[in-house]
Length: 171
Image (tube, rainbow, N blue to C red):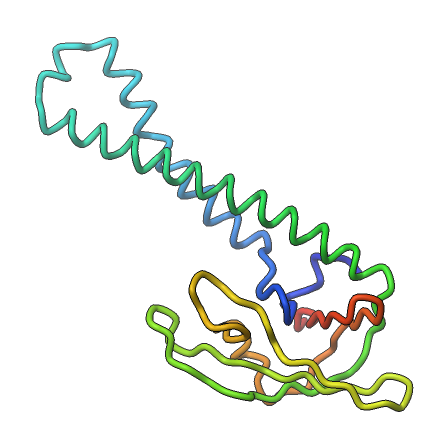
């Protein structure tokens, strides 16, 4: 099984996929217009005399730099997460499991954050794991992405060596 087939990790949360990066790259392309326009306007100094245009260009360049920093951060973090998941996949066993909603909170910008418990059998022994993923300032184990798995049967990959549960994407 490949990393691209994994949707969620109980300890890391949602894994990023192509659709997430397409959005980031489109935003980067749009914000790249500001530095391009700024460089072009240096060749036409008579246009820069307008203060409002100058402030708009400065603001646009700040947006570009901010967007670039976010893109680099997300790309580096995603690479680290995918390396970790690749290690977990080395001894992963594919199993059927049931996800149960343990709790739900309303968390500001993220309307429904759910904590789930995944129950499965391994060698005729019942095991369960509770979500522990955490995002910026949120409570441990509560993510909006877990909502789609609450109270459903899912296919998981369980790594006995690392005691990690990965939920496979629904086809």
